[in-house]
Length: 132
Image (cartoon, rainbow, N blue to C red; front, side):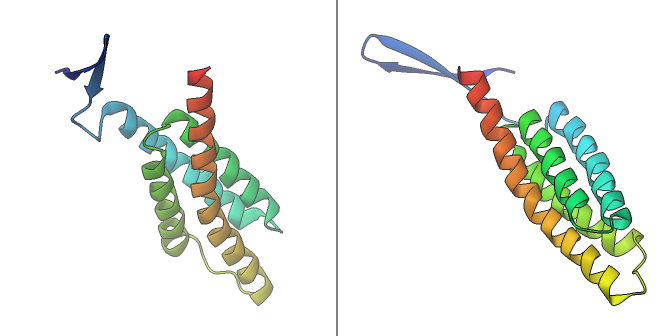
């Protein structure tokens, strides 16, 4: 079903197409990719001796998600941050040493923040490339 509205300004006529469904097939496929990227980030958080690898992975993967969904990237960023946090709480065992625990927590919460930033940058890049 195509919902389009006609807008006339002077001698120009514009057609505005409006989608009625937020959860379309493309968003659900990208939500699956978000789940896979979240698992990859969790793996990086667990194996990395420092915060650099999880931060790079979170930024790169979130930028890719924002590039895939330039208008709904915010939803994928929220989903990725939620999947990372829930996955860490539920599936990842707590390390024994306090230093390892601190590095993992810093990697976890920093990766959640970088998911939003990367998705925003990816969406901006996609929209800029589509324009020009």
